[in-house]
Image 1 (tube, rainbow, N blue to C red):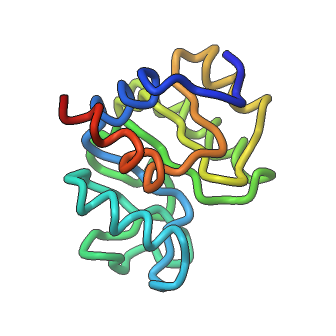
Image 2 (image 1 turned 90 degrees about the horizontal axis):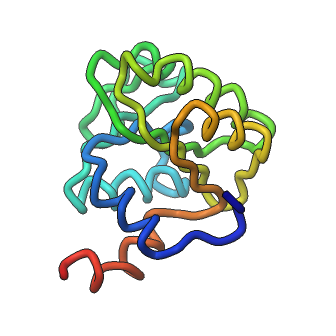
Length: 148
């Protein structure tokens, strides 16, 4: 798949199929984009599990924070990556390793996050991939189609 454009149907399929999202790079600081996106996704009915090693054991927006994807004790379908592109590959590799155990189906890299090699590895492992997109932007854009 090319990673410069995604059909609305592809994005819609993802956003309608997932219920629980692991947000890697979650921040407790309200001014950070990851905090705003987490709050938005919660408001849309998703359960969002924050992942941030420096905040592990604390809470962000009412959810316990985990140090890694492996530490999350419940299944989740999507991994939303709020890390530098250089760090995305390691997150993708962890998600691939945990795919069966956790029920992971989707890797979503936020705006400005791009790793073609990691995307290829994820797709080879059977995961759907989105890069350089934000669900906080895509959901309102697709809302009319989501309700029909």
